[in-house]
Length: 285
Image (cartoon, rainbow, N blue to C red):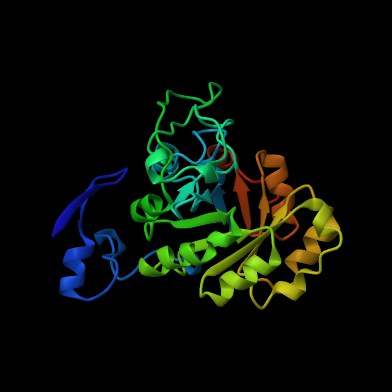
């Protein structure tokens, strides 16, 4: 069976699960654009830009249309989104534990099932540039199927008890090196690593005052630090042995230039378009 999946660029034929199982016995058919394989964290450039929640100062956060726009614009090499779990185990894209801030609905996300999720509509902020329509927030599976392998993805597992389900979705699509699984908890990052996922750990400026990041080097692939941390704390993280050290949430060229000068090799931004348009000062040769 062949289905047509429409991306930001063109309609792409993708073999459906049933057809693929009959042909290969695998669990997922890679999009044709992958060529010999999906984009992975190993292909990221020396300095990486991440669109935080899709770039929430430029597009509706955690929306499919916002992620599509960020992908099409090409100002970031990683798309970030947040994940929550519904009461029936469905994994959905949402930052808050409650619906009020970003949608026209109310109540806890966890109280909904998949049928209830279908009725939720995002409420785009009026301050966003451009024109945006209300839309249903996507499920995690929908985002993985739309973008997986075409661009590196970063997801923050807001519900630690969802980690096994997330791992199954990611592994079934062959995306273990294409999706960063992020958490503020070292124990969750360690468990993600043990599940064969690419683990990311974020830390606040206050946490970083007492952190010993070298302890995480054996199981954290990306250390994601608050850009407001002290210079000494940022440098200590850069020298910790963790392979990649990025800073969040960097929304001005000045803040970007500082963290890059201190040795970070990536920034996570609500405004990736702004940073892409503004040359870095004091760039390393």
